[in-house]
Image 1: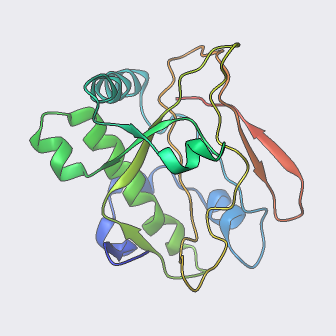
Image 2: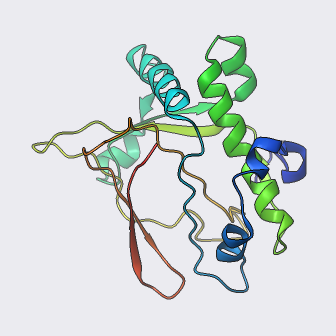
Image 3: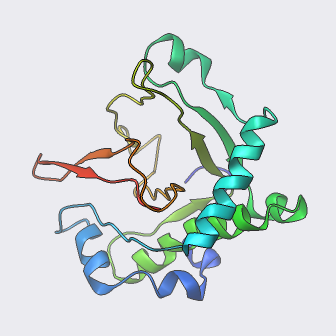
Length: 188
């Protein structure tokens, strides 16, 4: 949500509708379901590789930056940037533009199953985590929406851009509505 958001229906894209099944909608429905759904293979391996390459190039040219106050507090140590599909397309980053467009289209498909009206922010956040065993990359446990009145986020979608066979960490630990933790592998 927020001032720079549009109704989810304005972001509809047929490709996203092919990814969201009734099972995914049911898992995310606020009245029941565990609140977590995983959709592997949203992009082809070549699309993942191209988007990853474009994102790493952006990072290498300092277009992503550390969130200093959160890094200083030990909350996270990644680098982020806010990406718009139109700006990416105009700059020649077609693979990342496709990824952003897909992420922005998912809420319309989830909303179609019933539940709550969703708004989609114009930019999406991209993050690069690089670490080693000596200096692990991290983002401490947090809630994406603590106060619904001031932060209307209802849905978080994550697209991993790891290459096939990735074994370098980066699992997401999410909690189901019943409090059980789920480890989600970062598959592209």
